[in-house]
Length: 122
Image 1 (cartoon, rainbow, N blue to C red):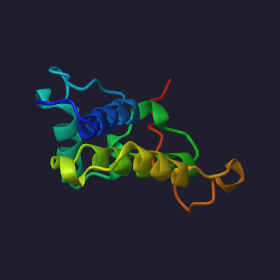
Image 2: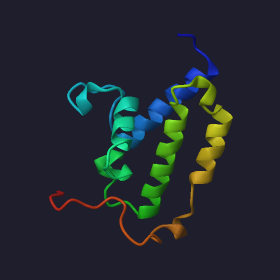
Image 3: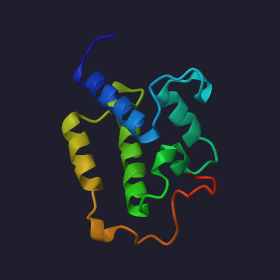
Image 4: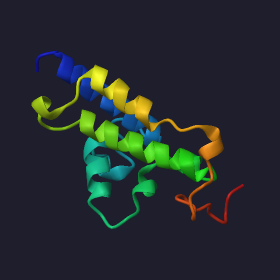
């Protein structure tokens, strides 16, 4: 494999996925030992809500923040596209990430929680 700008974008996407999911790139004991990209693709193809992909530690955050994380998840998946030609440039990634951010006064304006808090939280 050659190191290129597009492979750097892929690696950045993997790091974003690790941050958003709270998982490392490969976890043999969790997620069927799949690489994080394959695990997220599998979860996205299931009937589970997209928010279930996010790290469980994010429960209880304002819905707007969860929505931003889901948008960032989409950007991460764009970065890890299997076709290098279809991946964005880092300049495009930065522009996309800048569009995601909303102001704190906009938080809490959604009608229902995107991640429900579990009843057995400590």
